[in-house]
Image (tube, rainbow, N blue to C red):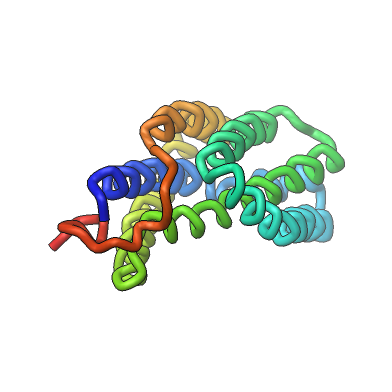
Length: 201
């Protein structure tokens, strides 16, 4: 794996960890907030069904077009849209508005999940892909746990809306790191001095 590919993987892991902390911050409180906005358990179920449905439908198209247009543009778009959605959650007050935001969030989730999987495939070599992706998931998972812990304290002192404001701002700022990810060439299938790309032994 080339030095530039290793750098790209490290940057992407860093950005993903920041996003994991952010969405960990609002994770359980997001559900509480959506429940309050929905006005009933049955409407809450509909809201999440809309999100999952559109997330599933979007995944194929995200993969198809990212193969042709590159991964990075989709990361930028989903990040900025997510930031806007997080902010809008603090000002909406109608059920139809909630359904609309849930639908858009489902689309961005479908794109982001597909791009993440695809980009990890691009940045890891076939022989060590499982190990590298395992490390990536472990790091991002720990970051999410940190966010969940911090979120409880922040809600206690500042309220749920504060979390959404912070999350929106951090997501936007974190996209600066994406400018340092370079695309081009083929999948990192040539072994080099850093076969994992993350924490080489």
